[in-house]
Image (tube, helix red, strand yellow):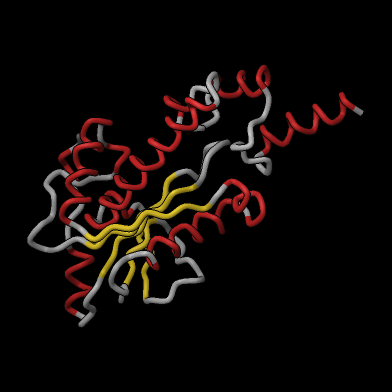
Amino acid sequence: MDARALPDFAYETAAYARGLRVVAGVDEVGRGPLAGPVTAAAVVLHRDRIPKGLNDSKRLTQAQREALHDEIMAVAEVCVAHASVEEIDALNILRASHLAMERALRGLARQVDHALIDGNMVPKGLFCGAEAIVKGDGLCVSIAAASIVAKVTRDRIMVDLAQQHPGYGWEGNAGYPTKQHIEALLNLGVTPHHRRSFKPVHNILYQEISVSD
């Protein structure tokens, strides 16, 4: 793990200083894969119970993510939500990822006053104030925690789906368009869990229709 630039509690502290009482970090994972849902997490950390070592999930090993996930779940307020493959295809991936974020925030036990959103856009459907933080998972501990929870949860979903649909390598590639995944798509075909609006999947489906016609 890169210890040179760990995220901190500064964004949360600034929000609390403005009189806001419940501040949540929000992140999503799964925009790029060809298969599976997009998953978002909303996390409210308590100032005196922040797990040590929180960082952008991409900077952590799987073992570190798993351990931190369990610690976050034990000490923080957490909600995880998803947008389905069908919603991704109907709405587009950006809107679906924002929908998952909105659902995660609404699912928390307490109503959120302010959301710290990873990225450069605030979802339009939020019921609370919010600010977007570019590369927030590496700057803000609440967003880092959300990135870890979202990543671990979605990876577990893809491992389960890999058992139902062996051969695509989802247990290792999480549905991203790796060489193995593309080859499996060509050889095994498209599953119900593939995003038909994504170009590699769409192209394979279109080829199949053309051949059958």
